[in-house]
Image 1: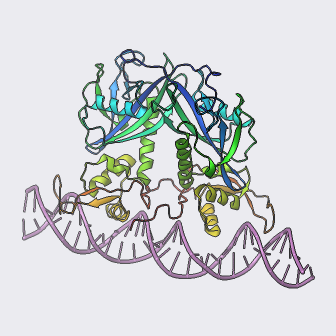
Image 2 (image 1 turned 45 degrees about the horizontal axis):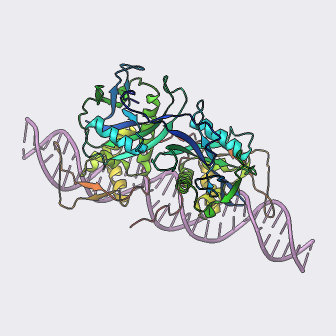
Image 3 (image 1 turned 135 degrees about the vertical axis):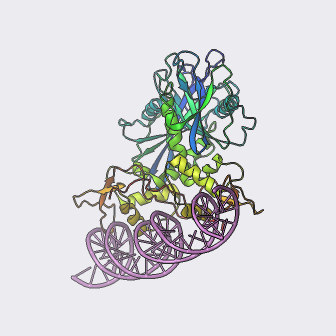
Amino acid sequence: MGMDYDKYAHEPFAVTADLAVLTLRDGVLHVLLVERGQEPYQGHWALPGGFVQPDESAETAARRELAEETGLSDVSGLHLEQLRTYSEPDRDPRMRVVTVAFAALLPHPPEPHGGSDAAQARWVPYDTAGPLAFDHDRILADAHDRVGAKFEYTSLATAFCPPEFTLGELQQVYETVWGTALDRPNFRRKVLATPGFVVPVPGAARLTGGRGKPAALYRAGTAATLHPPLLRPTSEGRPA
Amino acid sequence: MGMDYDKYAHEPFAVTADLAVLTLRDGVLHVLLVERGQEPYQGHWALPGGFVQPDESAETAARRELAEETGLSDVSGLHLEQLRTYSEPDRDPRMRVVTVAFAALLPHPPEPHGGSDAAQARWVPYDTAGPLAFDHDRILADAHDRVGAKFEYTSLATAFCPPEFTLGELQQVYETVWGTALDRPNFRRKVLATPGFVVPVPGAARLTGGRGKPAALYRAGTAATLHPPLLRPTSEGRPA
DNA sequence: CTCTTTATAGTCGCACTGACTATAAAAGCT
DNA sequence: AGCTTTTATAGTCAGTGCGACTATAAAGAG
């Protein structure tokens, strides 16, 4: 933008906001996908998204699309994070499309209703999210990487949890996203030792689906960043 | 993009790639700015950048702009990182412009030659980079934040250094970007204990501008991420 | 030759961490 | 009821990374 506008022919671009919507269902990471109803990639699965309207920012467009695809009424409170922008010239065979990709984290997965253009939407386990349309495989992988990395030094994991949660639930979020088992007493110690990460719900509340001792409930704290960070185990084998 | 193209009127957008080019000059962090030659913001300073051409990705456009503004012949090897995309509808008073912002790190600051449209380009100390055109103040601040944060857990700091450097020079890079003084023996211990961060140049090479014992030379290692990370001191005061 | 300057080596105590054991409080079973 | 299973929570202990600090080495300046 520092350049002279009139000396550069600026071809018009179409701008879309695409979403990698992640959630946990029964301890398994799922992603929201839509089935494409037309060419190209007709019948293939793709990330939900759509064109940015003239009066919208990409963030606003992403929230609107998310509400449309999931039928969520309250899209305001959930976590939406801009991932990066994909702008390779041949991403779409028909036209020049620049896509601003977002990652969204949902605590309770609503059943998606079919998209507004009759394309059906479904929750798909992350591991079985087969080859997707366009470069959406890469976008999805980038989203997973980013979310996993931010779990280490931010309180982002609480975005997967309901307003009140147990430390066991929080630990399962970490284990699912990282794909690693964590030691329960140590996880507990670290979380409680990190100021502002979680705050206990004073009413000696409890909640357990089944057996065992009832667990104390916590809410997300005010801290956005974690000090000290909660590093993944063997995040990288030391190349000695 | 998962949506039906034809059911959405997609207004054409102009897409630009803007750059926050950072470098160190005499131990002071500088940013490359251009003076705008026309309205809006005529006479104001702005980040260099320009329109993405029809056959380019935003990354390619950023490298081209960088080469044009700095006169660098070898733009291939240096670090270019996509920051985020700014798409608020009123960013530019004349038209709808979506900007993909990049941060670039240079080891040796070349003298910039005037931009191709007669706008002059200059290195400006980061602290005195006054109010910039458009939302470039925010882009520049975001770039600084991102670079500072990535210094903690990546080997990005070596992108500010020449191919061979001393640990003192690397430490000065950290101190300048973070704005903090670091203990020299401890910094040395941490860097050398992090596998793949730096590798010594075997020929007992030395190099010092002035007095004192000559320092050993190192090259950047192969590790992209740092384990353990090199955390800034008092990154956040513990709220007890 | 001594002083200053910079690089490098080493020491010490604290805090954090991983691995592990122990206790508490619930549900299920016989 | 008594026992087992299950889950939550508390505590222990050794290794290690780290901040603060001291000591030595190797150069130039006077």
